[in-house]
Image 1: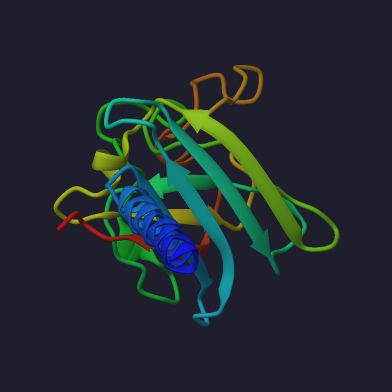
Image 2: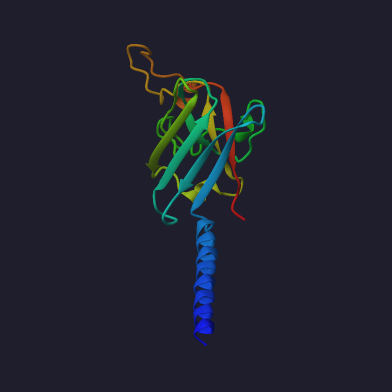
Length: 187
């Protein structure tokens, strides 16, 4: 009899553990997180970007891990369209929210990514420039790594007396698109 009670207790605990695992898995995919695989023009995975928010209106925590990129600073943005067609990735459109402001203040502008000599980079930050829902709109979005450094349209007047040109205001002069990861629209 004691063996049956003990066995029933163990089965109850195992069942609760399985239920907890199912509940945690459901919470993980509740629309408050996005995981993006960055791929280069050859389709090779070069990194992962994870974005999470505590609620639909909370700031978004971003974690980036990349490898195999050229050592240097790289522009790092969210682009407006969830398409990553190689080799140029121009299918991703411009930066998220680019129509509203100049570069450096676009909702999709993120800190530059510093790739070290060993060709790896990690980056963690929090942004209130966009929400997870903004990334998963009707056409999705794309996370993009550019070939060069981003100047955030910050050109001192001594170098550009008339102010930055339109390309700088639009893109931050960060150059070609070298890695792209698609964020799918919400279902």
